Length: 198
Image (cartoon, rainbow, N blue to C red; front, side, top):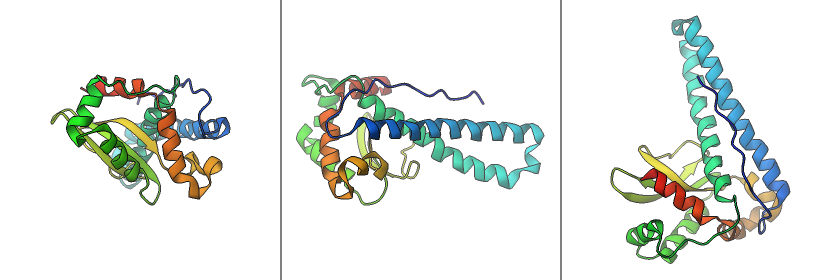
């Protein structure tokens, strides 16, 4: 399997989210890239040796791959959205029009998405684009991999694992972390994700 490459992000000073938290969080992302590659290497070795000898082991490793791979990709969407400085969502952008078409207003969508992000447990609040139906969907993803939507592209991903906010906000500051995430969001990156997904 061709190895995955770790991406670099241009994240400046953020409101509420410290550079130390970002630094440690990026190390975690790096681990997902490394582990996705290790799983790929291990599977390659098993294929060469004959899968009949490694049936059970290979099945368990493939399960692990979805966790590592989705962890890598979710973090790339998250960190990219915090790169390049905060920018608002353009009033006449196709994404804003699609959000309004889906939820009636941007403010309604934002309120729903923030409520979704308050889901108890660790995971991700994600806005997806479903190209087949030309539709935006919002879901909670448990951990990294339970709740990913088949055939949909994540265009906005908010990391709600405790490592993303507890050092700066404490467990009780989850709501403020969500507010600050949107204050720091570079909507031009989300618009790019939407344009690519279409």
